[in-house]
Image (cartoon, rainbow, N blue to C red; front, side, top):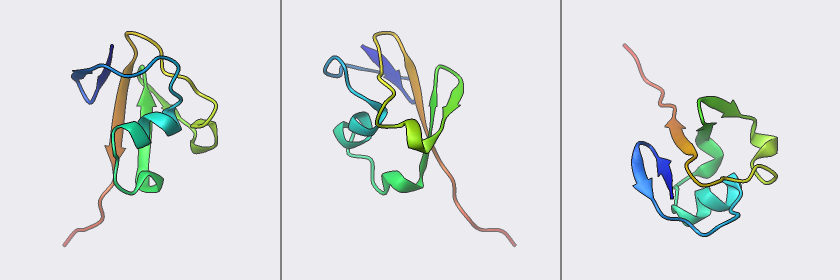
Length: 67
């Protein structure tokens, strides 16, 4: 069990962040920043960073706009 955007979520053991993005069916994963236990994960580390039990993951979506 982990938390994804503050929601308790069951995932298979040993997923990397890249695999978690696919598992969670995140649209446009290349446009999402990921925070793991309060720290931003560099995009080039997504495929090598594993998510472990009790981790907290936040998917951060940046949107343009303004007046």
